[in-house]
Length: 297
Length: 220
Image (cartoon, rainbow over all chains, first blue to last red):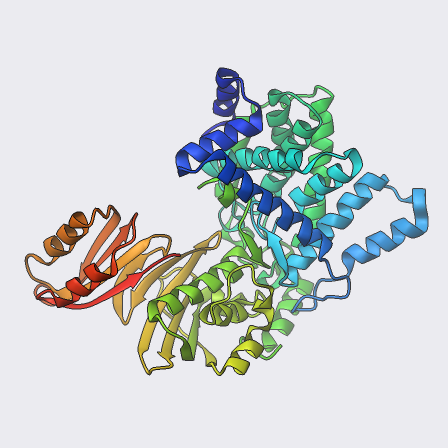
């Protein structure tokens, strides 16, 4: 894994390889596997992402009963209202997909943690919807996943990728940065534009706390995946328009780490602060705790 | 960390630590037992106890004990599956102390042939696990490597005997830890290896003077 975005860019320049290949080659060297082997594994990951979207069951509710059927409602409205939704059709489909995959996660269906299970809807929502709109080949999508992995790797090395350590900015925030960079790459943006899209996405969600109601990966996690995905495409469009993060991307990641450290424990996946600590949040938690561990499903 | 740690694993939700990690703990305990499990007492600690039910940690632990993989969608029906296959299980609460990770569990297991095994393990984030005790003795390992756990009497030469056997077979050690109950008492060696340890070497180790038991864990 690379310790900085600048290291990736330097190696891209030195070897004259595209962003994705720089990440792929470096990983193969470190893991002692061939490029073919790595690509084969990434193909399986891409397939699993596509399947996690396809296999959404619109009738399923999570074990707690807190989530389910959100994506179907968004789809129904889009189909009924046509062009009258506030978001464009592309954005509406991204919203629906982020919900489909996150709800599937809450309902114990198979997903790809990217970078985590709680943030699993962001990257596939952006990538699958882009493939649908622009018609990219699967090869291209697999390459885009290396871009997301390279970005996530830098965030993991310099900061962290878990809500318990860094709050939701480290999960949905990181996923958003990963998706933003991959989106720029897919549309032919420069290596510099890739990392600046990521930096703008991270900046937009900096400080986002991890405050799951009753400690479960449902409220607000499922709908925060929508925010992460929407934030990713706006950051990508800004980067493609030539906007650059005023703060260098590596320094943005460092700031995220520092913010994560300053977050109190109650806002780092303990279910004790934020939305979890509201009267309604506490009431849900109390109600759920009455159903004991190991109870029949 | 590698690219597939960032984009992956493929798993059944909702939580890498509370679901995928819990499956892996069950799987690791099953491997350590080396045969089908007949009965399991599952004692939950900390966050596993507090939010485990909603995250399906209970279903995930049972699934792992039954040998289901982290991406097996039957995890959510594991209780039913266990019932069908005749594995009994029950849940309880335990306080393993402050120095134990909040996502921890103690498993008290019995196999079909009557073998008993106690495992304390934690889910330490991103689906990675840490097995900290086996049958009451300290044993820190991740389950990502071929792992050799040797219980022996605490006396000179035991460590040398084991490591020279590994050297002879060309097995490279990645990490090594040595614990003991007290000077001259019981000791445990936990060696994580890059390569597989041949079966005949394990049998030879068991014959060595001072060695009380040899447990071998293969990640594959």
